[in-house]
Image 1: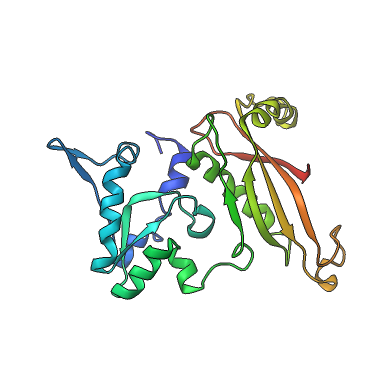
Image 2: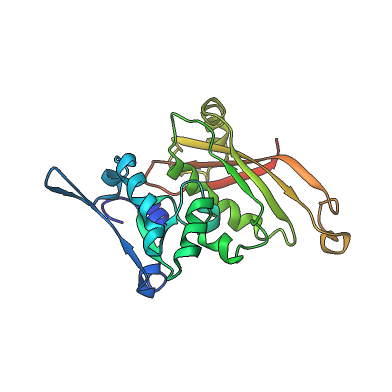
Length: 233
């Protein structure tokens, strides 16, 4: 926390008592390049070609890549090319790796709220995949209160929209607090449940809502995203 900040910790470090390493079935790899150990996360991701070769061999020994790219919404963690999991079934490991699916999806244990949700990270010069991943948790925390609704998609807008909405974000910050320096705008689609479940809400029953916009902001890249507002774009 002291060295990297809260946002980094929330992306990559499990709450004590909940790390998959406690199962005894998971381990972290590191690299030795030109005789020197490469073990810091931000350094290890600089060698995609090496990781591709390693990942291609995992299933032969009953291992899987546990936290895949662009699958934070399913696993709860950003991409970790170094974190592998032993599942004691070579055929199952090969199926998981060949299909490029998460262990949660293979086991059929995904939350129905997000089981069919796709995430489009788009193309950004402002934000990395892990930055966009940081917005997923506060969005899901709010969405989970929408009883019976199912999230169908989340998508990054574009850099221009994010820069434009920074002014709007600062108008929404608490009075007397430091200004935001970064804004993030995502759009989503979701489906509402039956009439009985939407009674007393503003939703139309059994309806697809498109272009639902989420505005988040933070004061620095080391801070967590704050969800400020949401609604039809």
